[in-house]
Image (cartoon, rainbow, N blue to C red; front, side, top):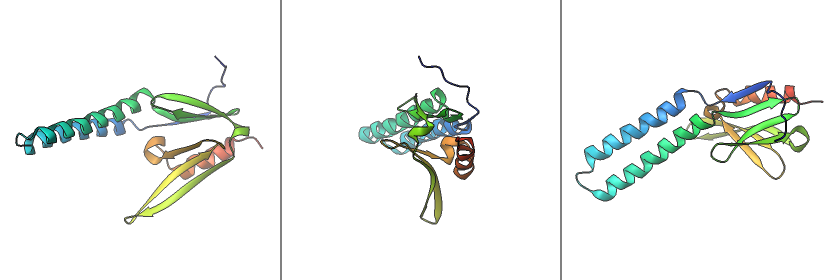
Length: 142
């Protein structure tokens, strides 16, 4: 295993996010049971969606750190609960993309590593994507 420098800063999923996902799954199952009126298909679909929410919450608990930075580069979440190391020379661009939809503006931190693009929202980072981008730019060697 390669040695990694201790992260100078890391961003993680806020603890309330997996709790909200789990609570949403419980509410969804309760509503499904309340309104299904014996419809097995509706109950199965409700259960599958609730299972998906629980799986998503488990991912947040298994890999809460989504992004970490140190003098050698950044570490990003990969797959369900893995991590990938990106050295600074591999990172081409760090930007924040803003999209307005339905009267709301969504901001996403984009880390472009050439052959891969890593996207992080506010709930992935537990911080404003603009602030994280500034911290990454400040940590990047000149």
